Image (tube, rainbow, N blue to C red; front, side):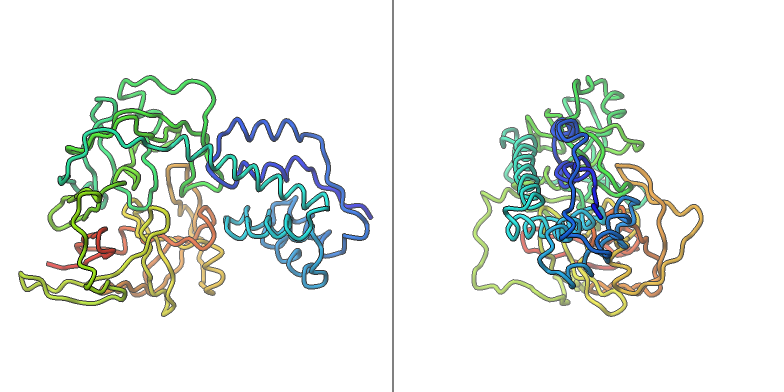
Length: 417
């Protein structure tokens, strides 16, 4: 029996893996249309055939089970590695997908599928470099040594007033967003000319399994007394009206988000005095008493890209969560929920919205603990519309606790009044 799957589908992996220029993805699709990858009779088996059938039907978890089982029987089957990479990508686990692509390319360099994996990896690398070049900021503008930015509460979100290209705009401060973002409709409402030509990037976020076409729009972004010129901001045609102030805006500054004082206090990193090297860093949650006699609970965080990662106890098990002030509710990726053995209830009408759209979600009741905050039987959203292994700690978890993000010390400090 000869098993075939369109090469068109496989080559599009490079365009789906990362934030990449859309025109490159279209070029790949047109150049590979009609081509077919045919598996030799000696390299196929029943498990592989069932897996490919499930893959074509978008049953990715079942397909992955088949490909992994196939590898147990034949660890030298290049196609099982490659198709596993596709499944991991479609399930949102980018790191494992890339790992299986690299295994395919390195272990089977002379086979057609190995060459295809290597081509895909090279394209991913090229597109990544191209995209990074598009969003780089030259570091120019008005950058005060020290400053503070007041914010206001709107619902449970933190909003700051600013401007883009001289037009006033309100931004949601989002510790879970790496880049800054403007909806296309808001850009037009501000009186700015919409980007012309084809989108040159893709926008990822909660609310959709796939990325949306986006433009990188460079202009003058001002918040408080900080003004950054030629600053890249993502623009996309989405259903939301909220502008996002992501972590890229704070680059170059050590800052504290003080929810009690409703202010973000910033100091330039290049002008800060060197920290006392004799002072040991805080690596575990602890409690101290400040000068006012208040109890302050210190929770360390680590960086992943520009995101803050905190260790949260979920039903007694420690898991990494993104501390996300832009998310109204907390969520766990569906694949991770399955590994935890969580009972997921499908609630009619339960939907989570994000910058890339809305998606139905399940709900699970879990016990969560971070530092002094404990929530028993707290409902969290379960969705596959985020990367595998991703958990977001949203504003619903924080409740009436005040927190201060001390970026220079790598601590989130919690207090109650």
